[in-house]
Length: 436
Image (cartoon, rainbow, N blue to C red; front, side, top):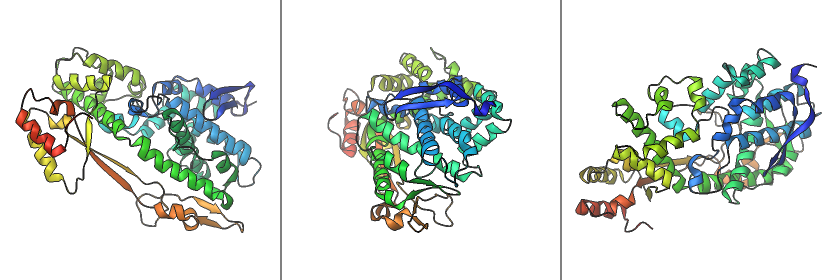
């Protein structure tokens, strides 16, 4: 039997709090899970700094990747199997792409990416195509199989139906992370009737569509996503932790460039700070390593790096105020000047952070980025774009919500041991009277 079709002697299962069990019968999938590159995902949190707001959010990219695989497995093995529109020759490709879609995420994901100007999808591709254990397994399937998997994840594959299962406005990735993140943060916003959605999914030539009878379950899913973004993913306390994390990395990079003598030299960051990152360097850096440095850097002689690390490690985060950059740019300039006068570096201690989300959109010709809409399959076989049938979805379609906040260290501003008059002016502008 060829490796691609090989089954395990006995089915393996992972006990999962969201899907109850994750089932593995394919030898290729089982071998991929065991690779060092996939096991690394155990050391990357799914929600970055959110554990400092919701203490249960300690789950990993490993958990989530298995969950996405399981949802896709159920769709193609239970719902699509036997349907003429589904080509079962794409089964293994779809399962592997689902399992590996987040393989390139770095520690603390998006904060890390912003500082070093990385894209985790580039590293996902590099792991799949490079000299890795994952690549060795994929190549055993066929010499061009790694390229096919990478193309699906990059959304450049000609197999649009396979791509839409993993990356679209209603895909296995979103369906898993909404439920998983809701479970581990302890909120109810991310719950929706996934069982119903899976039952009414249908394969079409280039995308997954939903039977009209399942429209209300999809409405529920979209509203769940909207609530999760604003109640969990964009929570201002989590964003405060992200701001501090970002500033720690910026400060360490600046000190490195100034030839500062670290007590704990960031050897794991050398290639990152010099823009010479190899794939091996990238794979060695996980959250455990970063937290070791943050813990150690609390003892550095540089007061900014030391303070920021103490704040992150001990959860003494920045406070925040609502901020409208269009109307309050003069206020920001005034605050910046006052911070400098007070001896507080505004580069690290006065930060504007923005959050933005588009809960659902449909493709409009001429736009830069094509957004494949969710289509409903009508009884007569026609397809109708979701917002044309759903008043709820129509009400939020194309409406981007953006939020801006100004972050600052309230404890320093409330300490009148020095620069009392200036700090009083700052507090007046920020309208802060206490730490509460």
